[in-house]
Image (cartoon, rainbow over all chains, first blue to last red; front, side, top):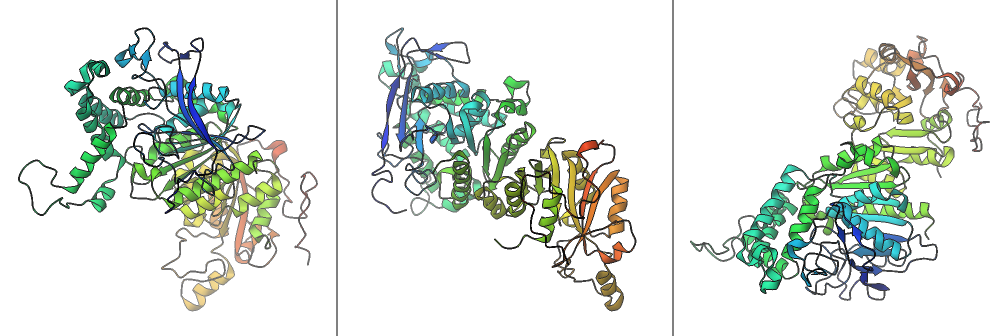
Length: 385
Length: 235
């Protein structure tokens, strides 16, 4: 993997911003309507004639549609470019791969930084609270607009995995297979607690200005950076942090002050400051809220299996990482148990790794192998060459 | 393709076409693949090793990574027509519980166990006073995974205690064809090296679904869609 050219060089890519007419609002779980709706998206490969090869990749909390192409703000490679490319797990020569920015996001989809048609100013806190279900409903609108009836697969890790579960619950007839990586069917108290720390950090920043910072011409960079730092710790395992940094110092000797003496401090500070360049603070509030509200069983009498009873024809693959303490393996097992209880055929594997939750972005051969095997078998079942 | 393992061939005869099958300890999925191909079953595997799970996925099989001792409670009651446990019951921490779980999850269980009452085992113990190492039990005592060995008689007694009905039983031996046996005959407790059982809950009315008792005799494949396998058992 030392290719200097972007992995998608020579691959047909597409996308941009899909603008729905004001007469086509997104109906939200809160009861509100969002219009006009815009969805930022990116595609790789070509939709086949039977329209049977579409793969939707759902991104995580701070991800975006730039799955396998250079990020327009950071100039960095796509967040999953080690998975998308010729000969890779998601081969654009075989699949038509779609990735959309979630609503509430800040990379082209309607979110709190978008203009509120009612005031001609950024929404800020006037943006309605959204849910994972709303994100998925917006994706379904785009998929339909692209002329696709059925997705060959919906794939996602972390919050992306939650969207995939929501797809299976809400649109089972539009789904052939589903891959859920390092996710959970609901947010736990600990998950909510960490998010609350992040939100409080943002809102405690005077530059947040009650959410109206864009009009004030400032940005709550310090608060957002702290939110990111706290969250980033939850994405790594203790072993990974120890292996990477231990108690290594930045310079010889201690500063006897509060500079970043330890390498791990410097690393976290960097994670925080580089994040604020590409992410909107209010988007962070809204998307973490959507995650906290996520409880797939709630709408189904508290019985998770009930959410999947109409998804019996969908083939599921659920994967967890052994050192993930954000969405640990028992959460995935609960999903599998519910799928089995609903009569769905599900595969489940726990991938042994010490890399924590973020392992799904990283070089983890067993993840590649497992996904490749599952998708190849489903592609054969779907009649994809 | 290499020749089908004798126990797989026997299981293939037992399983109805299009049945829902759970294979506990499915390894790399050879049996499930065979059943899917030959009997068009709707299969699900349970396997503990990551390599086995990856191999099953690559074969397009549904497989859950898990432990037969712990994770059978994942599956709802009567979710399957058959639950298969091939040559691993004696490796379970709680074989009695596992057996009863298999018949909660499925209407019928296909279970094979090595017979510790086999004459070679008895002879090894009697003549040399050492733990037996035989074809069916090849490992020395200190490395064997078999922690709960039983004789044919022990097994049928457990079936009685759990109120299980033995619908069919065959004796299996390495390199020989299967032989239908009555596992309650004392002589079989000497002769059978490994026994394969088809079990069901005694209380459940099986009626039309009940397989014929002569299942291991001349196999009736007439009702299946698949071509009859080559008859290897003629002597």
